[in-house]
Every structure is written in structure tokens, then in C-alpha cells.
Image (tube, rainbow, N blue to C red):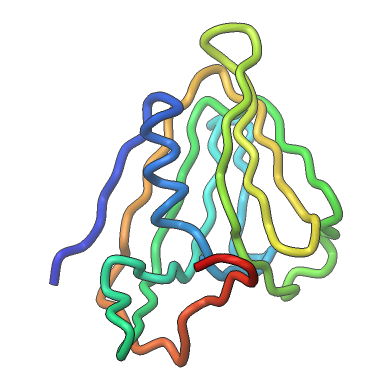
Length: 143
């Protein structure tokens, strides 16, 4: 069993993490911001696109961590609805004053989390073996 472990220190690295995290599932209660440590962490069930062979699909529990986070802002998310399901669509970086900027976690349903960062420092790490997924995520209009 090969567990994925990726580090992102620039925008190109972050694009690779975003590709692996596309269609990850989580709940609001699976995320935390530690202001004193300048850390944002999310536990997710990512769809393993590398194992999607047309006949079987797999998900894996993983941790996504961002360091050097100065502020977190929410769009269309209600922290009180801790069990609300979310589907991650993409992770993007918008440059600000170098080397900083904004990392945006974009979710289905016009929801987002915006992290103000000193600079990009992120890690994606699988936490264990995968399990069978019922189906492959469907992106209408894409081949």
C-alpha cells in the first residue's frame, strides 16, 4: 500500500495537491484553524483518481495542512452546521504581496474557505488504506 505524501511550497506544487484532492468529501467539523500556530487542518476522504480504472473506485482518509495562515474567511459556510457535507472541487492560489497571498478551497454549492497566507506551505498526507467507493464523481459536461 503506497500512501500519498505531498508538500507544496509554491503555486505549481499546490496545483498538484489540488488535482489529488478534487472531489474530496468532508464536514465542517473535520476542519480546524489554530491561530496561535498559524495552522489550518482538514481531514477529508479523497477520491483516489490514480486508482480509478473504470471498474473499481477507492477513497482514502487524508489530512491536508496549511501553515503560515494569518486569517481564515468563510463564504456560504455556517460553522454551526458542523455535520454539513462538503465536496472539494479545487484549491487555488491568488498572489498578494510576495511571497504571500490567498489559498482558496472551493467547494460545491458556491462555498469556499479563503486562507490568508504569509507564503505557501502545505502538506497532503494519506492516513491509511483505501476503501471501495460506490461510484466515480461525475462532472457534468466534462469527458
